[in-house]
Image (cartoon, rainbow, N blue to C red):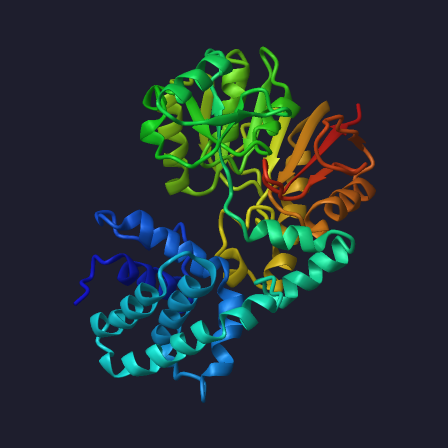
Amino acid sequence: MLNKTNARVIAHQAICSIVVNKKSLSDGIFPVDSDDLSYAKSLTFGSIRFYHHLNDVITPRLKKPLEKKNLDIHCLLILGAYQLIHSDTPIHAAINETVGVAEVIGKPWAKGFINAILRDIDRNQEIIENNKHYSHPSWLIKKLKKDYPKNFQEILIENNKKAPMTIRVHPSIQKDDYQQQLQEINISSQSSTIAPQALTLNNAVSVTKLPGFKNGSCYVQDTSAQLAALLISPKKGELILDACSAPGGKATHLAELCPKANIIALDNDKQRLSKVQENLDRFKNQNITIQQGDARDQEWWDGKLFDKILLDAPCSSTGVIRRHPDIKLLKKPKDISQITKTQSLILGNLWEVLKPGGQLLYATCSVLKDENVHQISQFLEKFEDAKNEKITLNWGAGDIGKQQLPHKEYDGFYYAKLIKNH
């Protein structure tokens, strides 16, 4: 008999939290103290990553839709189908252990029903595998098709892969030396060609294994995100605002590139600001001031104009779906129109607190054009004192800002550099 600390029981509970209760993967849905936690997480992430495909496999096999009170059984079928179709779990374990979860959740009546459906899926493996399925909500496929008619399929395929783990090595440490230190403890990594401090690990590891992590030797941050501080290029004495700053990855990067710049890390979420504080403590940054406030208004502002502003704008996160597969279940089309309104509001508000001649770097981890190139084009039409400065990185594509799509080495990301005319 399985118990409540079993990996499949934990994974089932997490899947229900997302599918039924609309919680996110980062909402603390996993218990802290299970021996099987990493396996439970991999089962959860996989089931959510391929949810739309699994759902389309399961639904026609149900004689009638499950009642609302039995949606947990549907989630259990998703978990079982994931193991059969998308993982290398032995068939008997995938079926028997998943059936056993029904007992733990107090629904032993469903055991025969779950067993029958999973066995039918197993018998039809070949047909299922030959049916191409992108495992995304139809509204998002439609949007991506419209924005990227030539390569939308590549985006969908990349979104269903596991994201790489990339670290930013502190500039006080030679990256090659650090790579060597990692190699000595059997952690292989690749050096980035576009972000000078980036190392992408061949396999993800716990941060506790990274040499000197506690003392600020490195920070876990995707290669694309590491370009923000380089594009801002902080200089001595400059007053720089990092808006929507939590958890502080980009602020700490700015601080380590130029310890003599003055950086304000702004965020409206008190809890998330405590994460920024943790990072400041770990890096012992002296030149960052934490400020709680909403980037949509100026109540937090002391009247001093900024030399540079980094706006890591709230977005749909459609460029990082492989890190957050729950986005595919939790985001809806109406959310996108709300997000673009918020982005526009923040852009207009922060433009007022930027010095003439100053620079605003707009960043999102989205691939949707409404949030990126269309947003910036509208801004340039509206504000006559704004000028688009071409980004000359050998990364991404575009004339009004640069868009990178999800890629083996880096996340989907967008940057636009705006200069305020004198």
